[in-house]
Image 1 (spheres, one colour):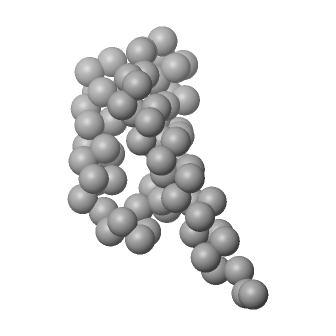
Image 2: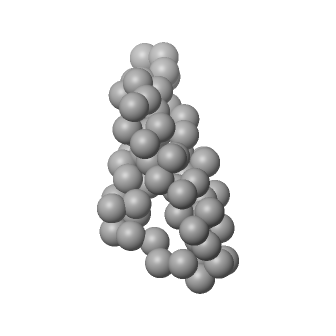
Length: 69
């Protein structure tokens, strides 16, 4: 349990330090971590859920930025 929370803390720190232009690429890692926490019946904080939603939105936005017009 503590190990999972420590891993989540490290991942959130990495996301916070990542380049804002490319941090959305870390969304799959965060999604897997959230799934793991739920399997281990650990509570996922609102802050973590909001971060995941933000990364999802950034990933969607990045897809449209690369579309030819």
